Image 1 (cartoon, rainbow, N blue to C red):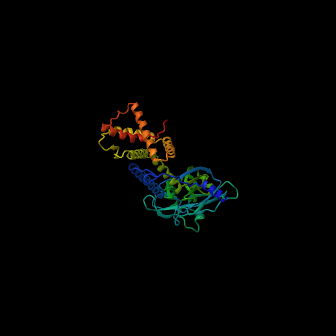
Image 2: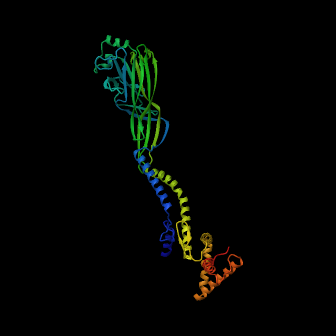
Image 3: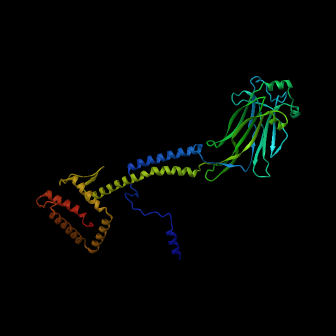
Amino acid sequence: MNQFIENLITQIDAFGVPIQLRYKNKTQYQSMIGGIFSLIIYGTSLAYAIMVLAQWNSGNILAKTQTQTTTIEQTIIELEKGFFQIGIFNASKNDINPFRNESNIILPLLIGLVNTEYMQPIPIFSSSIKSYYDNSTRDIIQLNKMNLSFSRTSGFAQRQYFLVLVKCTQQYIAGHGTCASDDEINNYINNLPGILDLTINIKQFNPFTQSFDQITKSQYLAIENISSLYTQIQFQVTKMSLNVGFLFDSIQNYTFINNYEINNQLVTKQYSHKLLNQDTLAIIFLRLDTLQIESQVVYPKIGEIFAQIGSIVQMLLMTKIIFTKLNTKFLEKEIKTRILQIYYSNQKKTTNKVETIECQNKINNNQLDKDSFKRLEVKFDLLNIIYQIITLQQLLQEFNDLDKLQLSIQSRQQQIIEQNKKKSQIIPLSEDNEEDQLKMNHLHKEDLIDLFDYKY
């Protein structure tokens, strides 16, 4: 039973190795030309692998990205400080800051809209920051952190905002600052038109650094005293799933604003009067778009990088077919040469061919090489090798006496000589002719090779 289990386990061994013959104490035949091209292939593969791994490590291999536009069901997003900024230019009064908290001329009011309910107006005053364009100091309005939300389901507060620019009144500025005189306010308003500079900072994902870059976009809007400017800004939300795993998934989720859409129109003073029961210069409505971008960013893992390298290396190794055939030819040539050296002791191997050492018999070297290699082509046949082994085995079993075996071989040689005489392939020998005798001696050795050939 134990033997049966041992045999069963041995038979399912997936790591068995073939039993190989050895030639010159090696299991493989290798040549100089194959070694040179192997170095070229391995060097090229290593250089390519280092290049790809360096690009992957530095983030220069871009991630796979899938993007689709979907409808928002429910979302909330926090706007960072400085996300939204407003400045004003007045050609005739460009040295006056109308948004200051003392002697205020134009009062910005932030009004929250939660579902359908308006919140209490909050006055916002200017702050001095460096200009995005020339690093000069500018007085602008910037919104502090606030939340925008959107939902299609009940029970979730939908939050939007109005930013309204009105002439300063004590009703809204009380406790926060003071208004300029009526003459100063009217003089400034009557010298409009002016230009509102809307600056919005959005985010964009940088696939090379795997971080978010801030992108600043500006819009210029004209305001005047005769009519009111109504501007609706819809912020587009992007929900991104970022997979930066080395070997396994490592997912990070982000929600941010990556773009916006702005629509402008002029409305009458009567229309704008309905919001605050007073005339307005501009109404800016801030809300989330009802559509969002869903994005999946997947960076290649180390396994994918190795697969990419392996595919290129595999293509390079396809040249193995060519050099395997060359080595096969070289091996066959070398083996045939060694066999001829065994049978003809008066020959030696040179670089390209087997040359016959000149001896007294003056045998034709070229004809010998050509005929010898041609005869060996037959002997390399597998069926011929098996046939010769079987024949030799039968002879050894038949002859117990070596003298009898030698007589049998000489008899076989004589039969071959007689057959060649009949075919007129050789000249009849003369015992007094020394040169013919040398040819005969050589013929005996050569024909001995054919002694047990399989006849097709």
